[in-house]
Length: 378
Ligand SMILES: *Cc1c(COP(=O)(O)O)cnc(C)c1O
Image (tube, rainbow, N blue to C red):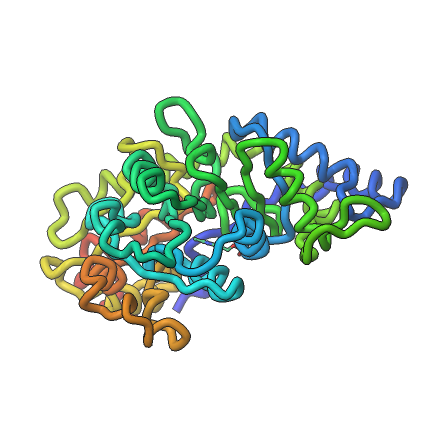
């Protein structure tokens, strides 16, 4: 058996180490390690320019940003959200003493289904927290219409949506706030990191205070804030990483195109985010393994693993099936048939700029012919 490096679902882009040295030298010489230092300020400015947004607040990670976004808008009671996401989406609600109300997803784009939101609204509902899942924009217009009608806030979990535009504008400008994650597995990373996009300077100021214990100045504290600050090392890495992010998108797109073409017409396999359709950033390449395919999803996942290919079942299990949620009325599987089916069929394939073409071809060959592939020779 050959001793190959495993191929993971993603692999972070790392610029040459020597390109990071000057940043470190600057930190060592000015001794500003955190608390909104020069790299932090510069990264906020450059991200605004790059993303096409006006106000952004950096965070130590995306989860702290979600927690703070809910605090900033003083969200309470119940919030309508999707069960088909990373668990941090709902956890941020629980940590704020808010009850998540799960609503089913659209069968095609796998985002919160606007047609099902209205019937989940109660007198306790104060907000909607949708996710631009795999970077595909939600139906933001329909969601906003409902929010306006019922006087609800909208906070987008945009952890997957770095750089995604719709009609020539950033989708991060939709809703009341959008939250990004810069975790190592995301399209743009600062090792750990996150951000909130705000519509106006006052909201940004409130968020900036909340992420710094509620301090206004040396002696004034106006809110029970938290420590959500991004350090200078992370901000510096972000500045370096930002230089290569366009090229990384192009490389991701090529990978997505090869998968899309290879699986065209393959019985039982659906590409959820095919290349060339929609404003995607190709942050993930999910496929649905349906009944027409010779293997079930878990068997395909296992087969790939035997070949050192580590695909991931994002998002299985559904958030609503974890113990702290499953007792809730809205968590019942009967309430979430589309999300339940997607969770049982989805498999996210490796996609990242450094994925070699022959490695990708091995993945494709295994999926095209799961019986006669080198699996037989192992
Ligand atoms: C990654 C992710 C988060 C959490 O971000 P962290 O930076 O890891 O805290 C939240 N929501 C979604 C949908 C994510 O994928």
